[in-house]
Length: 354
Image 1 (cartoon, one colour):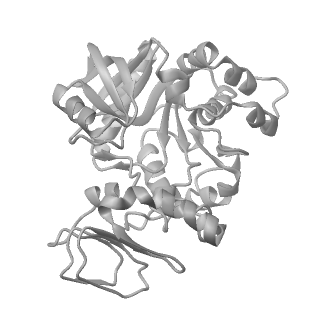
Image 2: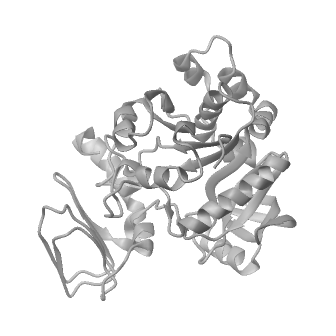
């Protein structure tokens, strides 16, 4: 481990596709979605602290979640929780983290990671990050971890690779040719068959110098706002564009590379993604909760509070999620409707249920 290693954890999302468990008050990154006794944020921190000193973490989140972050990661000091006054997507989030790192050093290796992803093979992941940093230290580069796809998934962004430029510890690094956001199924099938497309994990590695140069070139307004002498956070965010790092920089820069990765990754964006990665019983049910009894039920994802007894009979391919004041039952194939359910609830029942 080196003092030059820094980690920016992006933890400001709402996670509406995980309703009713995930709500505006307590989004999914602060929940034990997997039923393992730790939240997704805690798992992210515990994974990264093996190669990043605790004092070199910055968690960027909405101002309302400051106390939750400090409660869940007691190693952090209050100044390490960067409180966004407005949600302005990932580019301002990363620029904010860079701003804090820059105050301490100009010579930093940085990983930017979401707070709510699943990593099954931790050792492989840490070896991948270490190899990636070796590349970014020696090359002016913006490196993203590309996941070898296992199915034609339409819920992920895809990265097409060009020529191989390096190999570190048997891990290949290629120039990026194109980015494609969430393709139609037939196109996703073509991507899978071609072999030169990878899922975009949304995990990035770079040096502070390289990412600063990219902001100056492609998002100069954002860079100027976060390097102004008179730094007033509310003013910065009020004037900042709402833009993702992918659209603002990664799709435009010339020095973008992908590290071919395979470490058991999922973005856990939906109940379906959770189902795919969870342990299942003999009837292929993914059950979260200590007191769930199933009969004639198969291929379901069932999430119940540990203090509630649930008996489920005769369901197939369903999502069943219960909380203290909310219950969701729908077909797994219809999970894309959950966002619409949330919008309808907000309109018809008010915001107390979301």
